[in-house]
Length: 279
Image (tube, rainbow, N blue to C red; front, side, top):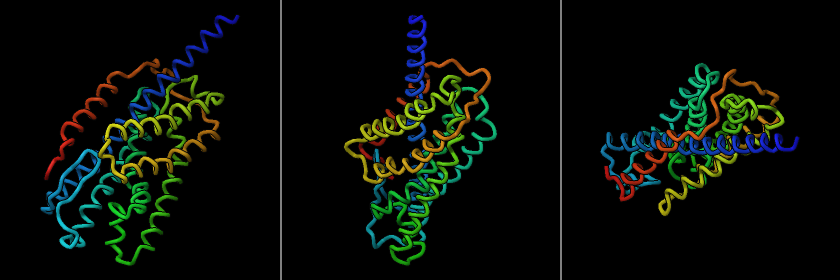
């Protein structure tokens, strides 16, 4: 009787490792897409307003001096990224909920993680950037011109909203996975650890190493603010008895197409931006 049991355990162990690797690949891919959307929108707005600068691997640096900035210019340049990501998060979230979550395959997990990353670039970025007193912090600072107190207050509100969103997104996390065995409640801790927490930590580490030595403090803060989503998702998922999935899930396998796409995107990003792209 021991031989079949060992075989089953090995199969289950292999399945969770493959699923965790796929989730980490998707985490990195969707992070790069959301970050690219945010920064591309910022650069395009700066170009429209004739504000020169350089787009680097991990940051955007503008070439004009502080006295040359004007109020509407600051709000437009630093506000367009969060605005675009807010629209993207809502769109991807609705697409996931209404069209993708009940279908098999990895696309629903891509939508789920992209929604989280886009949300983090709106709410989480305000929290993280308030510590640095730049980027998203400039928006309330120049909008209200009322001192740092209101900036901190809005950052706290944004943090609370992000935690709340994470709590309600837990059911989406559970419905973004196909595996019948992993969805069983007795395997919930493994699902949370390997397919939620590990992709966040390992994926953020891979992106950070990829962007060294130019990794910015803002981007490092965004990795940490992602925890305001991941932790409540983990807590709520551990409590939720939901364990249903699609009737005929796709067989667990390494998604080499997504791996190649992610690697290619990172390579192009590095080649284009490693010496700085002036605009």
